[in-house]
Image (tube, rainbow, N blue to C red; front, side):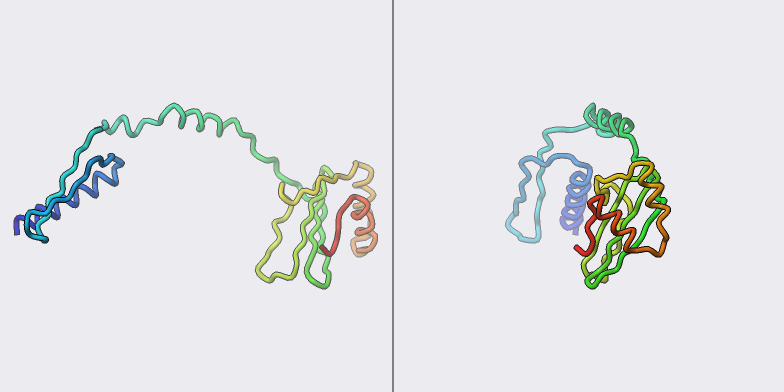
Length: 159
């Protein structure tokens, strides 16, 4: 009974040290003639003070400082958006207040949902201020007129 309690305690200590991040070097398991009787031996070559483990390293501190320097993406203010339906899916077009054009298309895929206006869907195309005013003045129901202007800007439909 005492030997099994010792083995359980030894295993618990081993697991506890492993969870704390202490390196195990030269671990060995020896059997003293009986398979049920196991003695776990460990050589701990490096012991760390708890305060040493909890203090961030210089590298971590430097990375944390750089995170504060990263500017957040500015909010995209959508002033116009439209979904254009076609035989095999939909094309989604968004225009922000600066005239930047965002576009994404889908093939028939029922589990897909559009990302919206984001850096990944930015086409690299942009309306000049006058072009944007002209585009926004197109009748909301004039799909062909909208597509014509967007095609001139390099937007492809029905991918």
